[in-house]
Figure 1 (cartoon, helix red, strand yellow):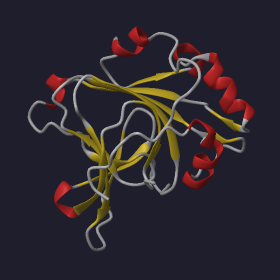
Figure 2: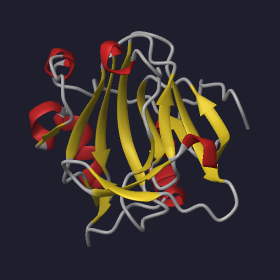
Figure 3: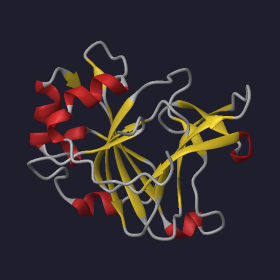
Figure 4: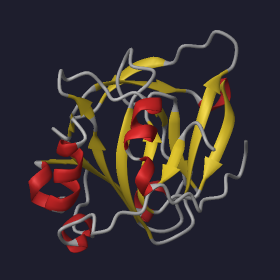
Length: 191
């Protein structure tokens, strides 16, 4: 099993309406109930965690035509183990990638509309795993990661999972909590 992603299969639709997501053209924050099916939100609540924030990250083909990849980043400064529940709409064959720094390279601080993040120079990183992910999945967002092979439009709905005290949900806890929805049909490109 991967240390970075886990494919999930829920009994009900993840999104209220996919067209709400594919209409997004810039990184956007939503209230969970605006786009996530109430059955999914109820399940999250019932297992004792919360979904306080939902983001939609569009990866539009034209925005990435020069490099066909997004920048390598860590979602939040200083948080090296956190799980996001994602829903990916991929019209191509994009790959999620996870990296480790070469030597003692630490990256540099950057920010987006939601958080202070860490960005990394591709030349200072070593790829450890890649996988083509679609639909529902857990991802390890506390490891430097990006998306590559962006030759078609792609949208990622990101639920920032949190414990009731606001702390991130750790990877080993999330994989246990979502175990009954495990549907790992992805094949890692690298292990």
